Amino acid sequence: TGEPFADQNHAPYKLIKVSGLKVGIIAVTSLETLNSEKRKNLSGVYFEDPILSFLKAKKALARKGAQLIFLMAHLNSHCKAPYPKESKTFASRANYQLSCGGKSDELMTLIRRLPPHSVDAIVLSKGTLGSGYIGDLPVIQGPGKGQYISRVDFYYDIGEAKLIREKTLVHPPVKVCHSFFLPTQDCYLGDRNSPVKINRWDMLKESSFQVMPAKFLGHEVSAQPDIQSLL
Image (tube, rainbow, N blue to C red):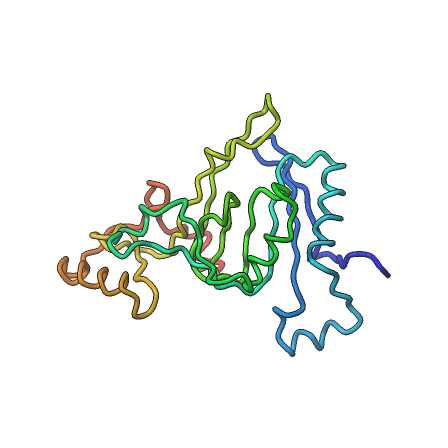
């Protein structure tokens, strides 16, 4: 039909209101990220250049008064947050520059092709664990499957009608769990066989694996029976 794909469960973009601001959300994907089984179910669907799709959606959202634009991208990426080995408390890490290991990374290619400051943050659905910045662009990524909570704090000047970029805070992903390890204040162990994981294991063994109630943004996490009944 020449029109973006949309049904009751999918939309090329969406406008929502958050704290009085109109926030535009745009989603793009590439054919390369789909496995062969999924491709069989998409016969007759044309995959447009993601940048062209983004620019069309951004123009439509601008007409609707969008003040912030977030891009959800379904791409393969290996960008990582280069957390220092000596930093053992995962919760203390924020606003790191991501390391992508080369210009051929799909996320890096996408960002290079985007017009400057055309998007305020990117949420990646197939990335490795680690959130931070690429240049001055906030990027949230994780392995998915509901394993981690990611958060970015934005500050918007209503009078100037612009985002105060220097105040943006990209929080590190928080692993979802019932209890935290006492010495590290989280339940994250680090990547397999990484120096960070080895250091953290030493700390945990020294504390005899003591645990404490899990917290999120300083608030203790407690089970909700009405939610558990649905699981």
